[in-house]
Image (cartoon, rainbow, N blue to C red; front, top):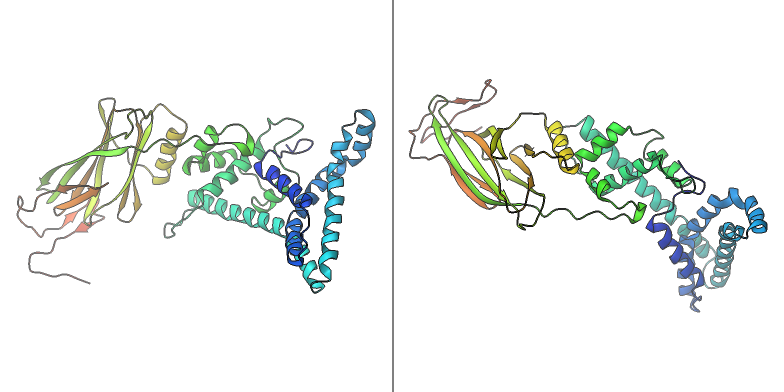
Length: 400
């Protein structure tokens, strides 16, 4: 999909072209130190000049025919002329500073400067490789004892690049790849393998990069992402607690009402993380949808995250809510969409042995009452018997 010339519609190519022209045209300073610094700056962009010379090198024989036929061949000769001028200016700079510094200094500056762009490019591609592999491991072979810290911006750029390389709808002239650079990217980042469409879509959905791709202007590197909607906020937090004598435990419903800060917001999202007190576990969940109270469905965490993200990012006409563990004692609650000034209501059922307090977004509610139920030391067992929770009687200190 490389086209005839390649795709260079990214801001970096234009910015480096302007900078290269300025550095080559700026008058050389009289001071040896300034001339040496200018030599270093010009050396950095030698790789840029050499790159375009190599890209257009196969077309040089055609440039002579183009000059004779329609005169546009002069444009194809530009990279060759620029390389000659660039090398000539660098040679003049080296000769000018040679008498003021040791012989190895200008050579070291020249070689070191010329290596800057290739090293920066390699470092960026290697970081993209590490991020992509970490994301694939997180989705397909997760290590639950490991904490993942992924660079979302780098992953989004990498997935966008992979998708551009897979795009077969580019025009014949520009194509979708960059000569040499795309080959280097595929080798270093992807090990010359292809990322399947299913994996690409899954990564975009799980990590939220699909929305950026859908909302981008179709203008390659000049794309801009539509601003994210303003997050919805917690309005009211209430609790309803009853004591279950059979379980010898409290069963509390925590009712959450959320709404947009800006009533004009069309599709806000409420998202929060809160701590679950010790001795508590989630036993049920609900979300109100169009006046109906829909119970939650217990699902595998990554699958639930994927479905929720897919609905949000594809503007699906469904109203998802998501309650998931964000850590050993942390819960993550998400509700979408919150439309206009209409509030959304959701709720979490928590089973707990003792009265506790729950804090969500600065609002606190009491679950259970210490005065309404006599103390008991009988253990509470979760359904299935996987967990037994026992309260120590007054005056007894337990420890391990």
